[in-house]
Image (cartoon, rainbow, N blue to C red; front, side, top):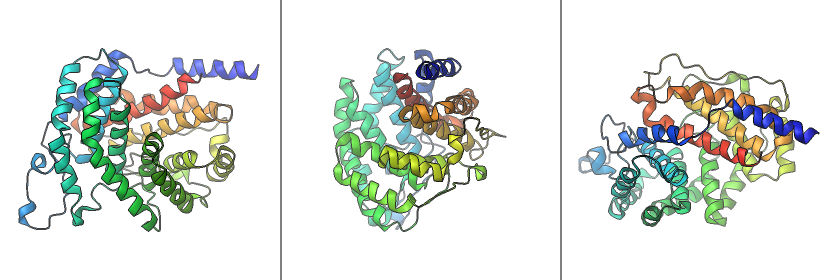
Length: 356
C-alpha cells in the first residue's frame, strides 16, 4: 500500500512538471545554435604573458569561442550533443552536426590543448569549465549518432589533459571553495566523477573520492537559510550533498546527510526559489541557474532514495518550473547558458521517471 501511494505521488507530481518534448527540445537547441559561433560579446579569462599572446576569442579558442565565454560554449556544445542523441528527429539536425564538426575538429581541439598546456594557464577554467568539458566528452562517447563518434576522438586529448589536471590539483586544495558560482569545488568534482565512472578511470575516481571525503565528511548543519547569495547559480549546500551522494555508500551517506541537511528529511520542508529581479542583468539572472541546480540535485536524491525523499519532488518541480519559462525570453544574458542548466535538470528528472 505504501509503495502504491509513493508511486501515485510520483505520477501526480510529474503531471504538474514540464517535460522535455521534441517541441521544447527544438526551442532549447536554438539557443546554443545561435551563439556557438557568435564571437562577440565575449568575456575572456586569459592570463596574458606578453603581447604575442593577444588575439581574438576565435583565434585563441577556435573550438569554444562563442556563447560569451569558454565554459558557456563548452556546455552549449554538450546541450546540442545531448539533444541530438535524445531526439533523432530534432529540427535543424544537419545544422547541429555541421556546426559541431566545424568547432570540434581535430585541429581546433589541438589548439585548445596547446592553450591549456601553457604553464601560466594551469588554472584556466578551474574547475567549472573543466567539469563541463568532461561532461561533454561523456556525452560524445555515449552518443548513438554516427557523426559524433569522430568528435569524441577529437576531443579526447583535451579531456585527458583535464583529467590529469584534476588528479594533480585536488590533493593540493587544502580547503574547499563553497561559493555558488564557477569555482564551487563540489560541483566540479561531481561532473568529473560521472565521467570517471563512465570511462572506468579508477585513478580519477580514487582521487575525487579521497579528496571529497577529506574536504566534506566532517561538515554539518549546512546553512540552507543563507542561500541564495545575490548572484549564485549553484546551490552550495545541494552541490556538496551531490558529491557526497556519489562517493559514499548509501548507509554512510544517509547518516552523513542527517547531520548535514536534516531539513530535507522533513516532509513539510519548504524552500522558496531564488527570485530574479532583472533578467537583463547578467549576474542577477544567475538565480535562474540556482533554481535548476537545486532541482537537479533534488531529482537525483529522490531517484536513489525514493522512500526517504519522495516528498521533495513537488519542491524540485517548483524550482524547475519557476525558471524554465524564462529561458527563451530573448535576453542574451540568460540565453547563452541557461538552456544547458535546464537540460541538466531535465536529464536528472528523466532518470527519476525511469524508476517510477
